[in-house]
Picture (cartoon, rainbow over the protein chains, first blue to last red):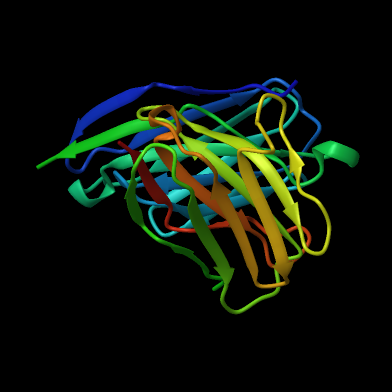
Length: 116
Length: 115
C-alpha cells in the first residue's frame, strides 16, 4: 500500500526566504506526482505535475524535483511571500491498472505561514 | 485550463435528511470522477471512483448505500449523502482529469455540516 509522508508538518518563515518542502513515498512505481496548494476551506489548486520520467518541473518561483528511485520529491519556493501561506499537499498516482487505476494518494500536507 | 465546478460550496442540513453534491466538468468530458472527503486538519481520503454509465467503485470502509454516486453523463457526477448524521460533517471534494497522463483538477469543495 502506497504511503505518502510530508515533512515538515508546519513551517513558519519570514517573507523573502527560500524554502523546501519534502514529500516521500513508499512505492516507487508511480505514474506521476502532483503538488497542490489548498487555502483554508477551499479546493485544491494544482501547482506542478511531474511525470515519472521527469526529474523536475518549474513554474515561476516554484520548482519541484522527483527522485523516483529513492521515493522523494521536494518543492522549492523561492523568495517566499505572505500570499504563499497555505497548505501544500503532494499526491502520487500509482503506475498500476485494475482497482488502483487513476487513484491519488495524498500526504498529510505542510502548513506554510509566511509572515511579513 | 480544465475546470471542475462543484456545488453547493456550503450546506447545513438536519440529521436524517439527504444532501446532493454536484460536480461538473465545464470544458471537457470526464469519463471518471473521483470523490474525496477531508476532515479538519487532515489530508484527503478517496471515497469512491465514479465512471460514466457504470457503477461507482467504493474504497474499503465507505458505505455505498450511504454515499450514492451517480455519473449519468460525461460532464456530471453527483454524490448524495443519504440520511446524514453529524459524523458525516466533512469537506467533500471531487476531481477529474482531461486526458490520460494529465494531472488532476479539483472542484472547490463542499462543506457539509449536519446538525
